[in-house]
Image (cartoon, helix red, strand yellow):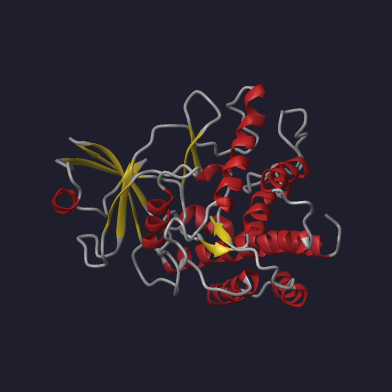
Length: 343
């Protein structure tokens, strides 16, 4: 946690007392050190603790940092088989912060920052991954129409739209040319699968450190960070999660690559995919290399945006953002290995 010197407690407290039933006497605001996109704060008030998530200050890329989409999707999922925090308030753009934010309940639990789960007993590690698998399948089984999200994404080929979007975002954030990124974009455009008509709610950043687990058992209390959620193809989330097995462990990527997963009680990528397919009654997955390579490309494009914000002085965690500059070419190279059938 860090002091939130950029927030004025007085005006913010008054704003929240008027907006949230039962909120009273804001006493402290602390900024979470984690996260690169939307700055997030712990609010301590006489009435309890809350979490505030805001757009970052400064000039933003078009379609980025839509905290209102995060609020809407979590509000829609309340009561479903996908655990989310309770949503309490969504502001407009004209606030005491000078930007949009939302407030949600604060949940006390565990966040696992290392995917090998060193803080867990051996017997708990597989159930943690199985809980992630079950929640992902549950998310993709949600009927968007039934929860009021029928208009949460555009119709048509999801991967075609996403490839176009993230190519534009990457080019807008590009600092120095990366030949593997250019080659990867070209390969993805040429290899784009024909749309198979599958549409579900997708999280967009589904990974272990975007979840809160119960303090004493492998149960997910909440899935967080829905900024990139939309209506799309469910295999995008699955492939994104499976990057964890391929990213190197001995690096800043916090991956599982190079570890003896069986020895430390973790499932293999193949077993994880098979469990997901059983839960969703899927016989097999075609075009898996495309989905994996696309996931690497998309994350590399996201990280490039973080680096660009650091250069421009708008990153939530500038030091960490600058460190990511070396990650983009590494991820592009890993994706190109997948396109060549070497992974």
